[in-house]
Structures are given as C-alpha cells and as structure tokens.
Length: 248
Image 1 (cartoon, one colour):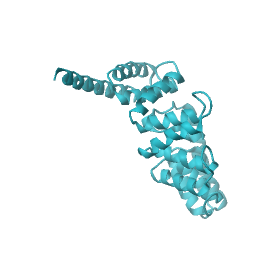
Image 2: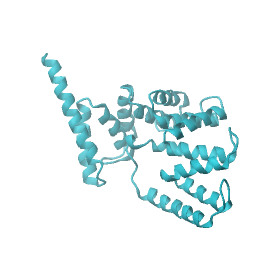
Image 3: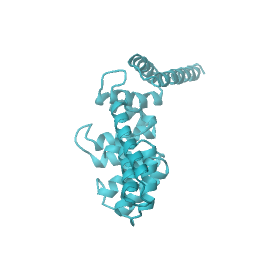
Image 4: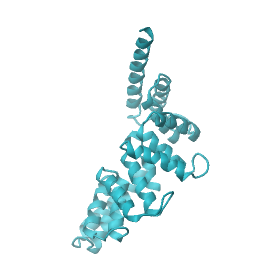
C-alpha cells in the first residue's frame, strides 16, 4: 500500500512539473527555456514519458541547453519504447537522416510504421514518401500517393504540399490542376512557403483557375513572408509537429 501511494505521488508530481515546463516553452526566451529544461529533467526522473519526449526535442534543437543528438536519441527512445507515437516518429527519422550512425531504412521504417499505426499522421506522410521513391520499400507511386493523401486529410502541411505537387505533375495519379491548387492553398495556409509560391504561379498562369495577377502577387508576397518568418523562428517542439518530414 505504501509503495502504491508513493508511485501515485511521484506520478502526480511528474505531471505537475511537466505541465509547468511546457508553459515555460510557450515563452520564447533563453531564460524561460532553461527553466523549462530543468523542470523537464525533474519530471523525466520521476517517470514522465511526455517529459522524455520533450527532452528529446530540447536536446535535438538546443532549446535551453547545448544541442546533443546522442541525448536527444536517448530520450526519444525512452518515450518511443513506452509507445509514444511522436517519439517513435522521431526515432525513425533519426535513423533515416543518418543522425545515429549509418543510414538505416530498415530500422527507421520499422519505427515510422509503429508511429503510423499509433496514429501519427506525419509518420503516414513519411511512409508515403518512402513508397513514392522506393526508399527502403519497393517503389509504389500509387500506394505512396494514397498514404500522402491520408496524411494531407489529417492536416499534415508537408503532405498537403506533396499531394498538390503530385496532382500538378500527374505522378502516381491523374493530373488535376484544380485539386492541386486546392491542396497547395491548404499547405500555404499552414505555413509552407513553396506552396504559397505555387498558388501564386497557378493564378499567374491560369492553371486550375482563371488568371488573376492581383491574387498571384498576393501569394508571391506571402511566400516571401513565410520564408522570412521561417528563417527567424525557432524550431517547434515535437508535439507541435514533425518538422523533419519537410526535408525528406
């Protein structure tokens, strides 16, 4: 009984610390990040899986501490082994990106598949990308498109861009400029600069819509604004999105 009570108290304290730490990372200052980092370590020591997930990102991007891919991997792995889908996704991409030694598609896709089966939409997009180009799996453009479309419908911006690109080029699917424009616009509204540029191009050239030079200018300007914002913005923490997929 005493042991059960102790575990319950530890769990409650871990959750409390984790919540405070997350709030610290909601304030984009070095001092707040450092405070959040110390709180995350305490919460992780008490068994918080969420804290391990966030520590993976903190070490990955150097938010409040010195960047360390080794420690990032260790914390992501602890959370992934506990079934955290976002951590599973990041472990998979760390293998695919050669961050933890040689490029290992077999091991990477194993974790990506786990994350996808646990509901991580960005992992579904990465699987689609893998089938699209035959990376670690047999090349299957149609299957790749189906997976990318599934992720796009779940709101993954990079997947929305990929679907727009596939529909505009007709790779693995019949070309459909009107639908391509729809998905490019969705991706642009989620912050993808290249998607905003392509929306502008479609309006500029009357592709999938009537020509509209004013709208084209608007979207070209929006693309430039998004590029500047991305350059000046710190990387997001993992629960806010798996940003690495944009580089695949």
